[in-house]
Image 1 (cartoon, helix red, strand yellow):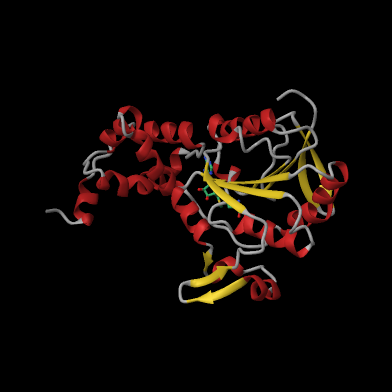
Image 2 (tube, helix red, strand yellow):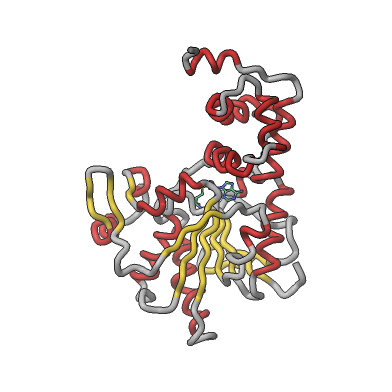
Length: 285
Ligand SMILES: C[S@@+](CC[C@H](N)C(=O)[O-])C[C@H]1O[C@@H](n2cnc3c(N)ncnc32)[C@H](O)[C@@H]1O
């Protein structure tokens, strides 16, 4: 019986297969690897090749491309490529812009209409829970606001639903909010979700239109720090899915290092109290 290490050593990577896998991963999940990062791509898939009892990455490529159970395997692939670097109160100026400007403007304009907020690529949940805490703190906790959160990684979503966090997640959350909303447990700090606006989680792949279409009708979307892993083409695909469903005037927040300028004509860049946000215009998607 080979050990895990020796099976790793024996895996064959025929020439051309890294590029085939790169293209398949790009098409399915949007993430793109330049040739100088093919080693990283192969490393991320190694455990799966072994787990499927295969000795060649070419066999694994055929499995992902043609086999009946490929959809199930893609869930594992997504977990393998998921970078869940996130923390509470990340890029807090955007959270302030939501709470102090976007939400009040919504309820002034539509006093009786519920507001839906979508945290796309929520990873382990720190982003949508930060929104819920900020809204609670600002007095919006009893308003009809629904926060939907999604990610393509089922492993990330499982941790988000558990809502138990380690120190790394608290690097910028003010201490008094940690004190107020979290209980220390043996496994980490557990968020007290009772009394907060509800946050619901579901799996959605941003480059798959059917996954996105129901969620993207939200007038507020937070889609932060995922486009940094996408190709320009994948960003265009995801943003086109958003634009088709989002109402005119809707707000799309992306990460501080991400830009949609030159990638879409469906959004205008606006500044709200030091925060940048893309506003859906009325042009067709
Ligand atoms: C760095 S985290 C961002 C978390 C949070 N939005 C933030 O800004 O802190 C990136 C997340 O994007 C998710 N992701 C990557 N590709 C995706 C895709 N095609 N569809 C949905 N989520 C994806 C990963 O699983 C990961 O949880």
